[in-house]
Image (cartoon, rainbow, N blue to C red; front, side, top):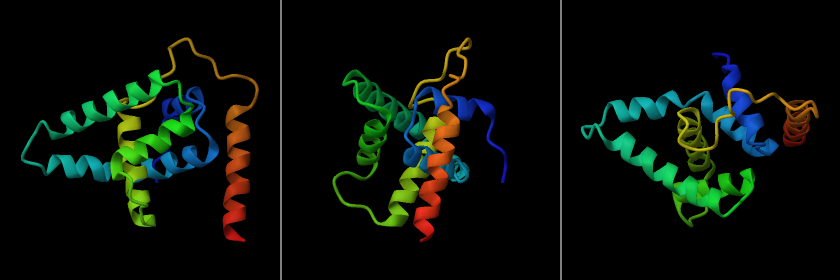
Length: 139
């Protein structure tokens, strides 16, 4: 598995994604190349741009409502699969789709060039919470 670039971690940190949503995006990033492959096989060469624009517009509307990052992820998942309660495979696919558009800067903000990681241990706190989450899932 390829190591994620530091900019992906910085973007996760900057947007203060809650641990569960952070983990879902990180897992989705491992498979987001599948979304790219899907778009490469489509006849409509504008399809990816049209879908990306839809995600970006929807995301901007959510930001205007001043939702926190966890609520935004919840709403973006609803944008993908509507009001139907998804099966686990559908939820995983939605995580991959969100990761694809997250990595390509259509959703969530990139930190400004002068942004410095806070010293309050946000990443460490998230990683520790993720470990607790993973351990609780095993028991």
